[in-house]
Length: 289
Image (cartoon, rainbow, N blue to C red; front, side, top):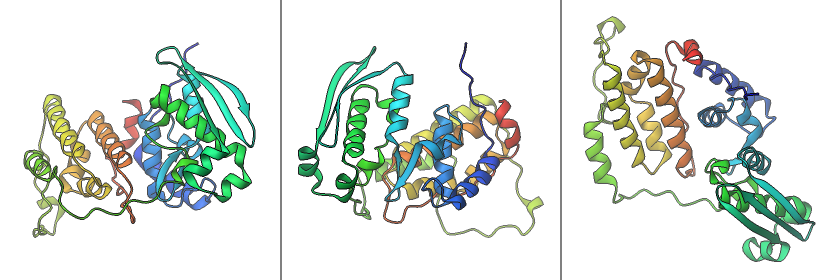
């Protein structure tokens, strides 16, 4: 029997649900923007957007994937786990996968205290903390796809926040060169805008092939970013919003996926920017393709 493929949730419905998730406080997600980004990641990975509330956490303003979710995805991908020990002093297991082989991972309290010092959570819940460490390392070693590029909450809590980088980087010139080619509005001084919507120029008509080339340039521009605020800046540009309103459904989905994935892959900042709410015209039709 074939597994059911979840139907993509329209962006407008995701935004509404994100507000409800944040207000409920049931899943540790504090803002609608956090919920929306996690839902977009879940949907991009082929799962129902609502599963984001079950599988992900926000720790120190950073996304984390729960150990249970990593282990479940690892097993669903053909992996197996054999536990040799699971106590307050030692967690020891062998992970196997038909494509990547076998590895044995263990964490004990001595190793944990050497790495992180004496922490309250390791005193209160030693077995659970050691288990999560073993699961994360084992899954990351044999089948990193199951980690979604994230750490488990227990690991994320031990990672110190990085200082925000404000200086130039080696990639700066490359990004500037690509931005001149990408059909995005430059971040310049605001231009006077016509008071009436009807005075705006008509959207550019493009073929599917032209839209594919446009998406390739957007991918190149996003690939060289190093801060989440830059992803937010691109998402807020009028050319992106115009493209979402006038493009075919497959382009709308790809723009949403690209923004969410690149936002998630970049390190969080002290005051992380959140992706703006972007309404997609005809979003109710996206679920049917």
